[in-house]
Amino acid sequence: MRIRYLREDETEILKDFLYDAIFIPEGIKAPDRSVIELPELRVYYEDFGSGPADCCMAAEEEGNIIGAVWSRIMPDYGHVDDETPSLAISVRKEYRGRGIGTSLLKEMLAVLKKRGYPKVSLSVQKANPAVRLYRRCGFQTVAETAEEYIMIRDLLPGMK
Image 1 (spheres, rainbow, N blue to C red):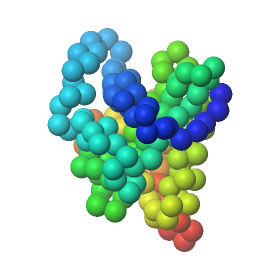
Image 2: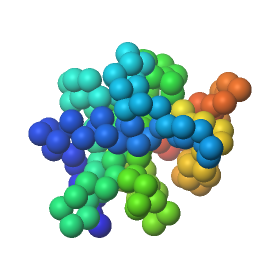
Image 3: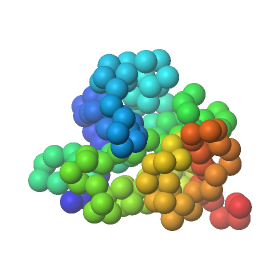
Image 4: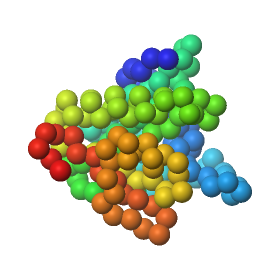
């Protein structure tokens, strides 16, 4: 497995990874794939590459993209302000539990830090096992709803 930047001609795959990133609790039927066409989800992929914080790292194995993490400043569920990129991350189901998500996330944090962003945010459902990954990687809860955490990870030295 290797991690690399997603190429401009590959951005259509973000739709697949966005759908895969939707947390479906056990016993709940998955929504129809058309859910990613809702305006609140289109912000994750529409015109990707046009914003200054738009960046995607892909995990590739045997020529296939098996995971992705991407950032952009957008009015998504994890939005905290207009200067902080939000993250989305997804690993194909059959590749989960192998540390790929951790590798992708750490790589993205390094890229965003190098680009000078002071922090990054995300939202995650409280029942999602990925909460543990985010906490291990230094994310802290800054707000919550009944079902979700909004988490921030400081990237620059001296930040709390």
